[in-house]
Image (tube, rainbow, N blue to C red; front, side, top):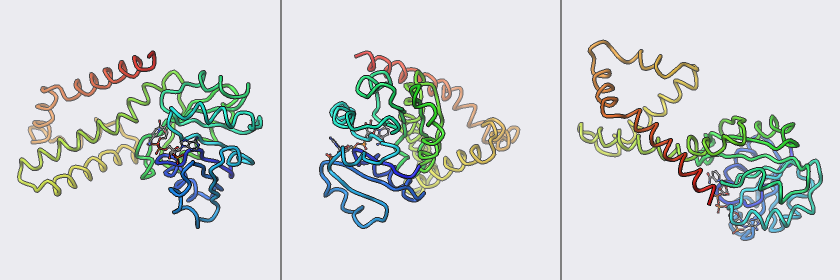
Length: 263
Ligand SMILES: NC(=O)c1ccc[n+]([C@@H]2O[C@H](COP(=O)([O-])OP(=O)(O)OC[C@H]3O[C@@H](n4cnc5c(N)ncnc54)[C@H](OP(=O)(O)O)[C@@H]3O)[C@@H](O)[C@H]2O)c1
């Protein structure tokens, strides 16, 4: 896929554009306040426009990156101009495929993508789901979002759970890094030094799993000497309910997101 249009080139849209451009795609970016895109004016393979209908002309994939409150108006604007082969990808949180399909021509290939804020550093965990017509395009669209991190295809009904684990998950992991930093300060490091040490250690732990494919417990076994300081600290954390607090927090978040969906 070469020609991609991003409607609503704000934070997310521009982050996706950065990743796609590095991988040789041709982009059209649209937003109302075009002056906010001045940094893109001189970039090769990038067209800028304030017209969404112009933006979608000739695009193979149309990524909708407007806020949910603007999505309906944008879909009503572009729907009459879409041709049946164009793949529409919505990133709007909380907008299910069924609701999106009501605003699109029947049989339009449609995907939902849920990235997280790490998309701005090309380290997103993005989940994708598709309607029936969109299923044939899942591989191609996965490859697009692989430009800004890692991508997984899931069932649409799992999208809420994925939002908790991956989008809210960023906040959960950041709070854990902050807790580690506070412990570091208590042991005598300046806070900026402790923050760097905690952050790089968290990154290293994640990289160990991503590179090796090992289970976390296999890597934990490599660090926990019998009667040593690591197992002593770890067991105190577990006695205080570390794993349980995480699981309960995720479940509460999941309940909340489902409640919000009903409203
Ligand atoms: N940020 C993330 O990491 C993230 C992660 C997952 C999902 N999302 C989803 O991504 C979407 C965008 O989030 P964001 O944080 O990138 O928001 P944002 O920075 O506000 O970007 C949205 C952009 O849409 C443009 N826009 C509004 N109305 C438009 C219209 N009629 N036509 C064309 N462009 C229009 C706005 O620019 P103008 O005012 O200049 O038009 C704005 O820059 C949301 O639906 C959110 O749920 C974001």
